[in-house]
Length: 480
Ligand code: 5AD
Image (tube, rainbow, N blue to C red; front, top):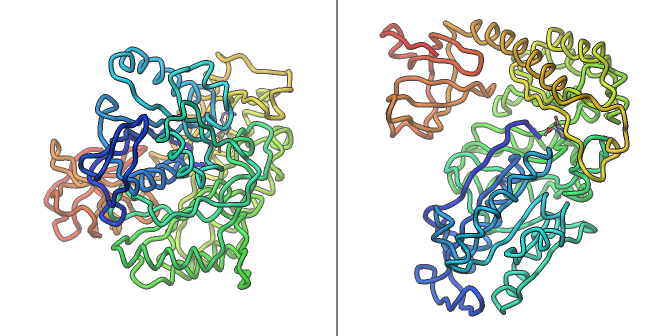
């Protein structure tokens, strides 16, 4: 989902909600309270789903008395929450594990690999990295407390690799890192079987959470002070209500948007196959639903789309875009694109280039095709040389850069509501986002984080805007 590969480590003060402790003994040593107890270091690679999984894993650990630390050197338990969407992402954890080897000889640690690489590689991880004690895929996170029991009881190798589940990772113990924006998973897994994609084998079958649980969690999050909620799912709009209410996805969006106190609701990632005009209508009628849709196209060529098993043609995709563009509220559109998929002729690639002009995306996340194990496309023979993939990617990115620059420059002089997310002391700037997910930098103050402000745009680059607070407009600007 999305495109950016995030890499975060999780540490800091425990969330008060989950900062209670539990007695235990084992290879992690004696532990009697959160402050005197074991420590963990958790590093996450990959998509927002992974980031949110990490928040739940962290909550589970903190509830057992573990304390998060910033550096792996200080941790008793080191966890890597991994991504295997492309080969490079998958290899990252092995370079981390290699680097740990020397360190662990000096001071023994318990090391675990979680997430998509764990599911994909399974027990092979123990062969490649014998220092690892825990291997657990995301579909088995409900078993984490048991697995931790086993580790604490002295077991040297424990695994959670069962994919045959109808459970979601439901926990009250989520340790959310951002004080304003909360991720909330509504559907886990994926049943789509796109020929390039490893997700169905790493995250298991689709499991939707019932609407009553989702709405109750939204209300609880608002009570806790969150003002923005991001509904997550590999295919968020494939969500089906398991409760007797049988809400449709667009109805769920509307209900979430109506939760009193919520200011912004986003959802990602939508699949074009399940994208309906009702979703656009929900956005039009509920200002809380952000004017932003991420709709991965993957390719502009119908021939390639059909080999990718995406379930739509170029024309059908463009028809979806046609129902977004006339909305009463301008909606920004972003996408994911893969270049150099097996058999992508130069004419196919040119079709992707012309699609960029036809849609005029606000943001594009683009990747070179990377063959993944156990996907249909590993059996396709007509591969494209890496160098050619690289050239196509560079052409596509340069073309899109110009489109984005043009679109962002059209925003100069306009005012937007910006939710401030951070402060950069070195530059004296606040950084926030518009409802359409554009990043805006403007002269600010540390205490503005979490506030909503009207900002007038004074300059634009391809990836961000620069502005001044509307009530201070006219006092000069900066360059992006
Ligand atoms: N190679 C390259 N990119 C991929 N993606 C998914 N699988 C692959 C792959 N095998 C991209 C898609 C998806 C995004 C999250 O990652 O564009 O939408």
